[in-house]
Image (tube, rainbow, N blue to C red; front, side, top):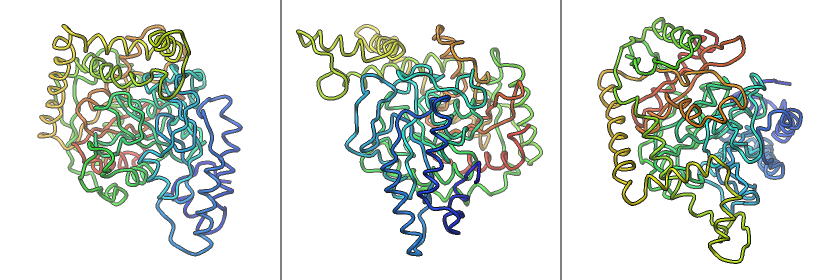
Length: 479
């Protein structure tokens, strides 16, 4: 039986009747049963829903009708994305028994494309974290080295794909939560432009930053996944009307002659020397492919972490106000309404979520709004201008995804500031709204993956994927 399935491999095996969709999903549930107790990547499984979808695909094959794009492909979904009939907790006790009555638009599109939803993956509570240690249901372990974190907040999705427990997965990225776990677990991971994928049904952390995107084992599968979930959605007013290209056709175009910006600010203090060596080796691959490397400056990069943690926490404070014990989720009864609010939120939220709510409420409060939140938005505009200015000179920007490889479980959990700094190379693209991808770029210490990050202009995911595919085909994963 195939160890590493791909989307093309699934389609071929089903079409040639080497395996049925039901048999394939059963194989993946066996894999999950064997490895999930160690990795803790999945929080909930949906075998009944998976069987129904598998039977639909098998019926299509039997009838000889054409197969949809993701027919029979077993997929995992981060537990902040609404799935009808499947418990969706956001990694939090406050939603421990919440079952959404509807599917997110991205899930509807996967369903229509024939994908089989295996279940929901573990994540930092409400997607707040860089290590997947903030989940109320325990930390996820990195398949590359189980004493290490998988990255966060989409660590369960990254780990599931890296361990072969799903062919592909959906995660969400607010400040690096797709790209950084992809880097740490050694799998391609993509964040499209803000507005490229509908956020309808995504349980919000920071609404001006949140994005849904795919994990897979190769760039062609990333392109296929993005092509299915992208596009305008009337349920999300921030989704774009920009046409969705055929990404799988676009990725094979040659990259020779493209100008790639290399910002000095992304190679500064705090970057591990072995990581730097791998990224520099990755840049050499682009030279051999005929790309021109251009030194660029992005002067406001140093302000990105502070700006991000002002804007994101302010939006989180507003979004998480709805969890009050009245309408849904956990309710801790008490003798007064105020006491019920306090006890429900006090026992339902974890420490990191509470920290961010307090920070966000503070920066929005009377007397501090202008000093923090308003100023943060002004600096965000300057960071976006850095990208616009750079894209006048170059076709894409190439950076490390993370300054360090996956760190040990517990190593940074008592130092929030050190944890926040792990996002230093990813939050910039989040604030600017541009698309970005992390692609595997060798390993350090013999086993710890490194990720190379590619940023493109807004809604030019095709260029980002084209560069990622060329890098992959040139052997970038083993530099």
